Length: 404
Ligand code: SOE
Image (cartoon, rainbow, N blue to C red; front, side):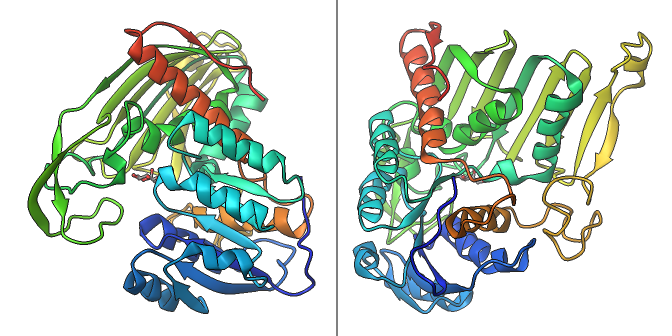
């Protein structure tokens, strides 16, 4: 779907949330006009909003936005703002998105779409009630060139998928000295599963197609309480701690199994207490004519076994390493020097995402694949909700709603 802005002037952008991910959105909007062709319409970097005035001001200065503020509601009546990124706690997404859509803004929400399935449904309904506006869910790893290249290989050459094995391991929550924050509040499944499992689940369907069932789900919480920080905390950051402790309400580790529509099996392991894995997603996909694998620890390469001739010996040759380069999605035109190793070989994922979203807003046809919509974000929460139901029922098999 493409939607042109109603104005003839620049597209005004604003970002709500100036933590680590909010700044990634700011940087993405700054780099978007430098990427790909045709040139985007002129952008205007209007405002960065954050509850902490100093943090908002710092981000606005660093990323060249005209102003900063502490109340996102000021954007609702600002006619110079057309596009807004929501990059705050998951539980706040719904209220902000509904108000922005009612105010006629295009909305790019960070993942997961919301903290609960009910709030995600309401956001998807709000988007459907505003078909003239573009909505997005920021599943940024769809913009990894290697992931997009493997998706193409699965669709064009690897044949029927039999098994997807994925893991997303982080270490940000491993220490009890990492302070209490929104990531640790909310019911079962709103922890590691919601925060990082949401990426892996979206990637699994992006690469392998729709799932139909989940089963064998289990959640574990090992760090059961955390110190309350003095002042505001952002991202995974450490902070000066008070003596007060609060109970952790959600999952440090989540595991589950899935079945895809073609009968393939998916196995998932998600952890936020995995030392040595700062931000480490990896997956293998096995199929009729071979296999592919990618590891975020080595993002500028992936490996492939291609055995279309079904040669009994060919598989024994093992995997071939592929260096991500201009033959793969997003690099040609997406980075100034598109040969391996210069821009860390993968470029600016948030810039690719911002460019795709702005193409949709500007009505530019035939450019990048569109950003995942609010409906895609709801789909992700439907799967997360089914995993929560499976875990609550001792690992029972739970059927998923049909894919939209
Ligand atoms: C991004 O890579 C990401 O997965 C975020 O989306 C999560 O919120 C963060 O906790 C870990 O990094």
